[in-house]
Image (cartoon, rainbow, N blue to C red; front, side, top):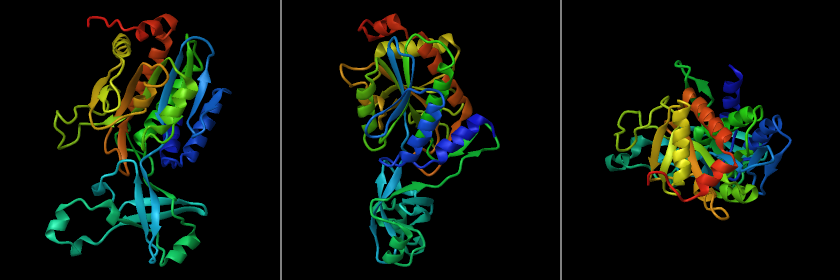
Length: 361
C-alpha cells in the first residue's frame, strides 16, 4: 500500500462523530505539523495549517466529522437507543456493525430491530423508524452495559475497513464524507509547501458540519479569508436506478464544481475563474447542483463582509451510510485543480474576483 493509500486508510478508519472529532483532529494536526509550524485552531476543534504570510488569504476547508449516532438511553435489558448525528435513512442502518466510543474503550455492536418474520406485510413495506432501532453490544442488563463503560451521550460510529477494490482506482471505506476532503486538503498543502505562491494559504478541516455547518462559522471568523474553497463529496449518479435528472456525475470523470446547493450560490466571478483554470490545465471536471443539501461554504461565504466561495467535491456512492466508494482519479484531479487555482490567486486576481463585474453577463 503506497503512502497516499495509507493516509486514506488512516483518515477513513479514524472515528469522528460530530462533536467528538478529537481523533481526526489529532490525526490532522499530526499531518499538518509535519509540513508547517503554523497551526491554527478555533475553540471548537477546527484546524488549519498556514503557509505564507503575505498576499490574499486563501482557505481550503474540508470537514472532519462523519454521520454517526449518540446513545440516548440504556434499556433494562442492556440495549442502547440511539439519536442520529447527521442525516440517516433507516433502510441503510439495520444489521450494520457499529462501534460505541465509551470512556473505558471502544465496544462493538450491531444495529437491531424487531425481527422481520413477525412484521405484518404493511409494516415490511415501510422504512423502519430509527426510534424503533437499538444497538446490541452483547450486554444482558443495563448494569452490565454500564460496567462495559457505556453512558448516555456516548457517540457511536459505523464500522467499515478501508479497502482497495479489484479495480484499484475504486476505493471503499466509511466516512468518505468527508475524509475525502481531508485527504485532498492535506495533499494540496503538501504540494503548496514545496512551491511558491502569491498568497497565504490555510488548509485544514472543520468540525460539526453534519449537524449544522457549525465549525465553518468559527473557523471562517478565525482565519478571515479573502477566498474560500469548501472541499466535500457529492452524490454520484452512476448507479442503477438513478435518472439523469436526479444525478449525472460519474466516478472517475473529475471533481465536482458546485453551482448550487441549499446553503449557497457560488460567487460568479470565482465560479468562472475555477472553470477557466480547469480548462487551461486540461483538468476534467463535472458540475453539481444539489438542492437537498449544503456545505461549509454556506456559512463561510457569509463571514464578515462576505467571502467569495466555491465548493469543489468528488463524487461518491452511498454517502450517509456505513460504506461509500470514491475514485482515486477524482481525488488526484481535485488536488491538481486546487493547486493550480492557488498559484493564480494573487492580489490583482483576487481583487477582480471580488468585484461585481461579470464577464459576458
